[in-house]
Every structure is written in structure tokens, then in C-alpha cells.
Image 1 (cartoon, rainbow, N blue to C red):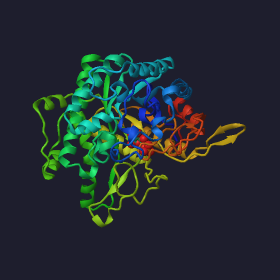
Image 2: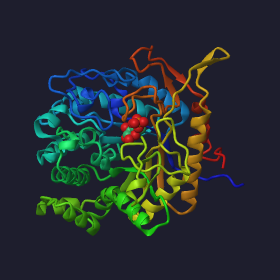
Image 3: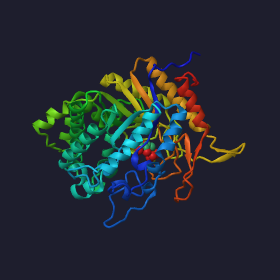
Length: 472
Ligand code: BGP
């Protein structure tokens, strides 16, 4: 069996988000973000009036104070890239100020200093489920057109300050998740069950315009900047070969594909306009919006955890727990403890589909297995025997190798939650993804000490061998 070969310069690393790792929620002049008042995570609702911040994310894993130690561990694994997000409310505490908060900017300067020291290329998400709370409560988040201007100001500040140090940027994390998690993803304060389709799609339009506008601004500020969109990918297979099931699966997939279509082609596709018409939605699109949308991305990034099935037969549309987008369970696949169906081949399918559809370099910026880990002591050293995680990652990376053989252009791979962090969908710490175990529990107890899991050395070897150590 031949070994798998990744191209020279392939970027290997890990991914995180500010609200899931930083903590320090009220330090350095930071304002509140929607996450600070979202105890349950996921498709959770806006806060009840007057509720005070109270959840694991407030301290998270204390990256705010321990970033140097953590980045040194990433460097020990040989990371050539590290994905993190900038907390919008550290830079603009309320979101609608005219001037940024210098202390917030200075924090990210220090993070970038550490990365530079270790030769790690930063990959920065501008907005990762962290809309300033004030923008949610005063403007109803992205439902308001005003957010385009606030986001443009924020993006410009970031590009001007960090553009010479950060080449790769992502505009919105999993932009399509707003369809199912309007508060977490779009800062939309109206409870999901009361949100009209009209407002939801108008919010999506505003985000798409803001994303394209960020691309325009980036090119004005620094021509070396590469902008990527970021979508939650989830291949949707027909539950049976019945044409009606195939069509249904395709339609479900298109609800997400449209985000990549607009980002790469600069206009809305016909199938989407039809769907809007059929739902009675009339988007308010200005001529200026149409011009802005033409600023397409340099690359497409995506998360991949699982696939699902779909069917036109309502009686068979039994949805499982699964991730934010939901879906019908595929009887041929096993699932994780959280019901996410494990499907390495789906990653190869996704890479081929995206490449053929968009012809833009792809970046896998999230992938991994959330599992309950047990800290054990072996020869006096505390570790986690996470062979299940190694198997999951190995099998997915083998499929990345297959896609490379298929001719797909892949820039890099950042495994999600390279250090244990708070889960986005469930706000638990016990749903762990890391190569590094963090001693903190769901009840908030723990020392915050870091321990290397077995997957730490395994991933280091994958990176050192540029994928050759993977087993088919
Ligand atoms: C994605 C999010 C991440 C991350 C990941 C794993 O949807 O972009 O923020 O958390 O999924 O999901 P979870 O943390 O819910 O297990």
C-alpha cells in the first residue's frame, strides 16, 4: 500500500474560537458577547431580560492568560498554522462605537507575537458566534442593515492593525448555521420560533454583503491578505435511490451550498431565488449590495464532522440529535456519543464536490471527534488513551489524501478544538476534542492544568511526516 502524500507547504494545525477558549470575559475592556449569556449553547435562545452572565465560557480554559503556554504546546506538535477568532466585543465592546478598544487589540498583538516566535501562520476568524450582546439586544443582530457598517468598521480595524502579520482570514464562522441557530450564529435576538422567513433571509443577505465588503476592504488595505468564507459542510445523502429522495437531499444541501455559491460567484443562484419566491420572501437588495457581492473570496473553508441523509417521505424523516443543521439518520453509519454520524468518506465527497463546484482552494478548518476522555496515570505521567480520536482523525485524513489524489486543491487542515474547550452546541467541557487535556469539568471545578493525550504525539508524527505516517 503506497503512503499518502500531502503537498509541500500543506498547512497543519488546530482550530479554536475566542468564546470557547479565552475566558477573561470582562477583562481588558471587553464588552459582553452573546456567548456570555448563552449558558446552554447551540440553538439556545436569547437571554431572558436581566439575566446575568453565568456559564463555563466566562473563564473557559483561560487562554486569555495562558496563551503563551498553549501556543508552545502547539509548536511542540509542529503546527504550521493555528486558527483562532478575535472576540468582536474585545475590539468594539458594544459593537457600535466609533473607536476600537486598544487593550483588546493589544491582546491579539501578544498572541501574534507568540505565534511568530514559533513560526506558526495565523488563521483568523473575524466573527465566530460572538456578536457583541448590545448589537443583538439593540439591533436584533444581523436582521438590521446597520450591522454591515459596524462589521465593516471592525474588519477594517483588524486588517489595518494585523494585515501585515495575518495572511489568512475567515469572515464568518459557519455562516449557514444562522438558518438553525439565529441567536448564536447571527446575534438575532428574536426567538427562533417567532422569527419570520423574511427577517431571517434579510439577515443572511446582510451577512453576505458584509462578508463581501470585508473582502473589498482587505484588498484596499493589504493585497497579501487572503479572504475565505467558512461554511458548515454536511453532505446529505438520499435515504433511498428514489428520485424524490435524491431531489430532496439535493434541496437540503442547497440550503447550505448557496452560501458558497454567493461567496465564489458574487450573485444569488436561480434555485435560491426560486426558493425565496416560493416562501414569499422579498429580499431588499440595493444596487450597491449587488456591486459589493461581486468581491468574491480567495478560498473556501469549511467544517466537517458528519454526513446525514434525507428523504421526501415524511414518515421516514426521523431526525436524530446530530449537529446544528439536524438531519435524518443514515442507517449505514455509526455515531458519536452525541449522535454525530461518523463518515470519513463524506469528507472526500465534500472536498470533491466543493472543488468541482467552486474551483477555489479549500481549507478544512474544523474536523474532529467530541468524546468523554478519562485522565489516567501511566508511569507517573497523566495522559488520556484516546485511540478512538486517533482512529477518527486518521481515517478522515486518509480521505483528505484521497481527495488530493483526485486533484482537489487543499491548502491545509486544522483539527477542531486542538486543546479541550467549551462545546459550542452543548456548552460542556466534557465534550472534548483536544490533543491537550484541560483539567476543567462541567461543574466548573478543576485546576486548568494541561496534559498531553496520546493523540498529541500521534498528531506530531503526522505533521512531521507530512501525512506519510497515516494508515490506510
Ligand atoms: C462547529 C463550531 C465550533 C465547534 C465545533 C464542534 O459547529 O464552529 O465552534 O464547537 O462545531 O461543535 P461542538 O463544540 O458543539 O461539539
